[in-house]
Amino acid sequence: AYSEIDPRVETMMHELLDRVADKWTLMVLEELEENGTLRFTQLSRKIPAVSQKMLTQTLRQMERDGLVHRTVYPVVPPKVEYRLTQLGHGLSESFCGVWRWVESNLDAVEAAREQFDSNRSG
Image (cartoon, rainbow, N blue to C red; front, top):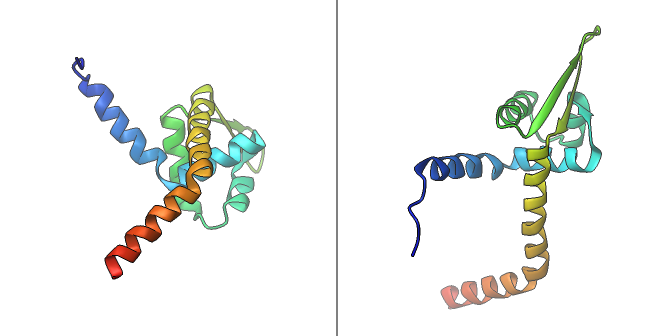
């Protein structure tokens, strides 16, 4: 028998899934996982398609969710660095599982798509 789902868990799951399914969050997660600590300018260079405004919003939300740690150094001009927290690393590991699933099942998914498309067009 299924136990009652805590509505707080369900709400948080939907909020976080919306957030992490966002391509910018995934890209920031990937860059910080691969490179460790990065400054804002380094992140924006590694993700050239993201606007400064969107990168700022993404990092702020990731910080709010506990996924990244932001360090501001009191120098002129200000130096700000970002790194993944324990939560951020855990989320990144979860996406590695999805990545491996896609790698393992790429041919099967493509074949299913081709079959579906050929049945619809014929």
